[in-house]
Length: 355
Ligand code: NAD
Picture 1 (tube, helix red, strand yellow):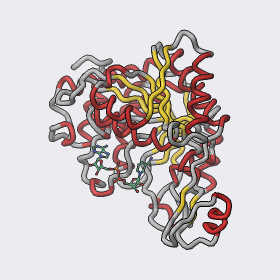
Picture 2 (cartoon, protein in one colour; picture 1 turned 180 degrees about the vertical axis):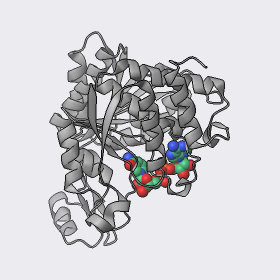
Picture 3 (cartoon, helix red, strand yellow; picture 1 turned 135 degrees about the vertical axis):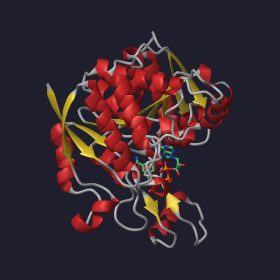
């Protein structure tokens, strides 16, 4: 079966790492017809927007996309193309597995955590008032607060509906993937009416899954726990902002952004992309680590039902790290981006056994 999948190669390092992901997927034998669509800073001039409608249409039609990182334009236009894609296509769940794949020189070499981040609301909802906006005075009347004239305001909405679906997603993921525990992370002691909802729904949904252990943690405590005893955790579910921060922290625990894949998943559309950004200072140098992008494409293969191909890629990453002689600078090696892609494709083609 040949799959048609939308491809956004992204900005900065995006095109280099996307090329390597395509190479490794091809080595699995899964046939994909890539529908490459324009997106990002590099298409702004031609299309007048970093996210042309035809690109979103292609993702809606194909239901699956592989996406390189996209630079957030500074000033004007979209707040972030990435946030725009997630909101427009209602990709409410951000899945970020953090596995160490045997990397040495990390404090916890056999960690296997999964971060499930809510993608549609919280401080990413885009409800903001610039300093000097006359609406801030209305907020003062409404709330009784007094703001200095130099105050900017961002509002954090958290709903029962969005909390329920992301928390259910986390528990369903745990059941489907043989995970034992889900931890709900919040700051409900302070944000009683926003995080308070998240915590309340977490406890209610947890009761619907008696086979999965559950617990909740306040986010500041969670950061300390993760740095000291990450092996105590399994699947974590968090509102948008905490999920963004904690997923980078977890990426750091297992070796850094070079090995941090991700997926944005909705009811029937999913976009796969690494956790990291477009790292413009490394662009075009053939030195950045393509593994996050390659592992994101493995998650994509798993999502479309090509579980064996996904496992082949994950095993190949494990083997590449064990061999240790084809690693990029961030893992202490000297290999190039294309060198890592070539070696992974070779291992995948040989079914995980060094030829
Ligand atoms: P970044 O993640 O692009 O890079 C930060 C640093 O992390 C890099 O300088 C590099 O040292 C390291 N790094 C990142 N990816 C790596 C890899 N594959 N291998 C090895 N090291 C890696 O963050 P930034 O510089 O803050 O952001 C650059 C741009 O990317 C911004 O415009 C930002 O908005 C955007 N961004 C996009 C996405 C996305 O497309 N989903 C996500 C985050 C940031």
